[in-house]
Structure formats: structure tokens, C-alpha cells
Image (tube, rainbow, N blue to C red; front, side):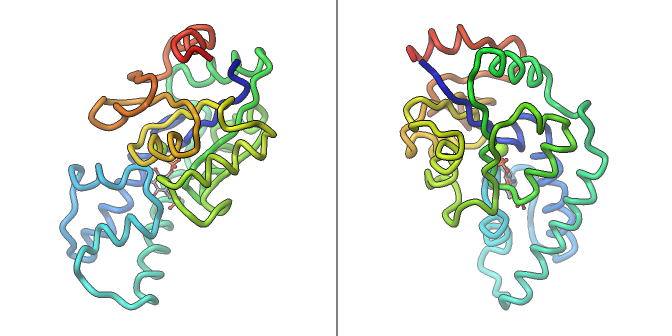
Amino acid sequence: AIQGFIFDVDGVLTDTAEYHYRAWQRLADEEGLPFDRQANEALRGVSRRESLMHIIGIRQYSEAQLQAMMERKNRYYVESIATITPQNLFPGAIELLTELRQAGIKIAIGSASKNARTVIEKLGIGNLVDAIADGDSVEAPKPAPDLFLYAAQQIGLEPDRCVVVEDATVGVRAAIAAGMRSIGIGPITRVGAADIVLPNLIGVHLVDLQAQLKL
Ligand code: B16
Ligand code: MG
């Protein structure tokens, strides 16, 4: 049976993927770097540094300049998450988390973001979560399996007993690399490699997932 769930944060539990996008767009505009919503697709779930490298393309910057730009983007992002409240949870999220908890399933967070803990607290779901693996937990970013393996370890479970919920292509790849089942939230073009693909978390129930995953 499924013993644990590992939830990505940005784009799965709340719409911070949009805030990340806007912060990068602002930085890119200020730097005169070409960037738009379409280009942002490649950044979904990708770490802060890798995202920046993607945006600057072939332009050359010193390490100090890169650091300064990452800090600036993060400042814009942190400003935008200041107003997050439990109202910002995606529809269906609280229902699913509550159901899983009542069923005795362990719940971990597996987010690439160094701001994940703040977001979880602002969303008011800290009490529903057993462990948080975030951007400070491991070195290798998604699609490496490290973050999800770390999360499973934190809740004391074997990878094959865990289900990852992800909205990013790199996240689904990380789940597969970790030997975990996965639920992709979003379009097939993005998360089609997941075991189950759903548009959102509305009306999602553990029994149905168990049946579909044969776990
Ligand atoms: P930060 P997730 C990821 O979070 C975001 O999807 C991605 O856009 C962001 O660049 C990354 O976290 C790092 O975030 O700059 O706050 O450390 O989707 O894995 O929850
Ligand atoms: Mg995400």
C-alpha cells in the first residue's frame, strides 16, 4: 500500500509558479534579457541558479553579478509571497492533505525552493506535514532523485512506498529516478511521463489513486 506522499509546492499546492515567473520577468526586463511566459516553461521546477543560467543564455557575467541577480530575483519573489494566506491553497489541496492524514499516510514536502518552508507556513499547512525537503536539503537539483529520496528518508519510508505529486517535467523525472510513483498535475505535454495525470487536486481521493497505481 501507499505509505507516503511527497508534495511539490510551487504549482501543486499553490500558484507560486506564477510568482516565480513574474520575479524572473522583472529581472530579465531590467537586464534587457529576452524572456517571456513561453520561455518560462523551461524553468518550471528548475533551481534558482539553473533558471538564471537559462535566462542569461550566452551572455557572460561574473559570479558576483550572478549572485546579485539571484538575490534580486529572490527579493522580488519574497515580496510577492508576503501576502500568501490559506486562501492561496489550490482547490482540493486541503481536502486531500486532510484525507491522507486521516488515513495514516505520511506527508512530506519536496520542493526545490529555498522559500518552501515560509510558503508552507503562510498556507497554514505546517501541521499537516511530517517533513520538509527544500532547496537547502540536498545539492543536486531535480531531475536528480536526491530531494525526493531525502524526503522519503525524513518520513522513514522506502521510495517504492511513496507517491510524488508534481507539476514540472523535471519533477516527474526526479520521481521516476527515485523509484517512486508519480502524479502529474497539469498538461500531458508537461507531466505526461507521470503514472497518473490530473488537471488539479479537486475531488482526488486516496482509494482511487491506490486503485490506479495498483499500490
Ligand atoms: P527558490 P518547486 C521550485 O519550487 C520552483 O518551481 C522554481 O520555479 C524555483 O526556481 C525553484 O523552486 C527554486 O526556488 O528560488 O525560491 O529557491 O516547484 O520545486 O516547489
Ligand atoms: Mg513545482
